[in-house]
Length: 241
Ligand SMILES: [Zn+2]
Image 1 (cartoon, protein in one colour):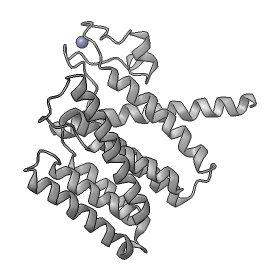
Image 2 (cartoon, rainbow, N blue to C red):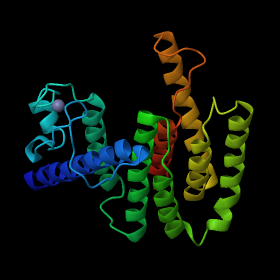
Image 3 (cartoon, helix red, strand yellow):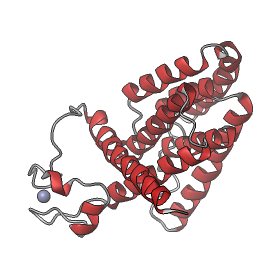
Image 4 (cartoon, rainbow, N blue to C red):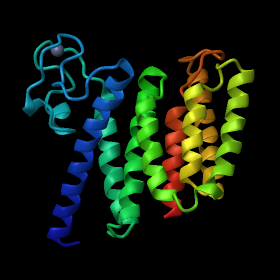
């Protein structure tokens, strides 16, 4: 690999990590009804974070995962989420073979929104409607000519999720998951949709089992399903392209 490619890849990863940092702000603030545009503050001492301490990935390492002012630990999830977004961003451009079509940009928007939805659900057990609306708009722009075909699969899966939600009284599946799976169904053809749902249940089941075995969770307590739906959706999409 020559140097230019290496630099280009590094550059794209950094943009991806910066987007991940922004999505993290979105996922942490939207469910609380906070503005997305205010400066970032420390969760503990509420000191405004200086711009040079907001550099994705590097600031976390440089500050040794602590606030510069009060030494309160910065959650590792921020760091990992930035790395995952950066790596996924790079992988996406590699996967689509550097074609920058209208459709590929819309699919990238869907991936980024899915990441934010997964993270918001992980943080607060809530899927913000604003993110679902952005997801829906990008999906409508993408699939307007096949919408009538995708709608049936979408409704069927959403109905299945609604039944699980209804009969478990919301313990096995939140209402946010029902809405989320409905918009995912509009974005994916039926085969990919089934793959996404299968992967979500498989990974969700494995993670829940591990958490129960490690006694981090009780049998009755719920694990957010949104992150696994996002994982299934993004994986299915990468296979589809
Ligand atoms: Zn602090």
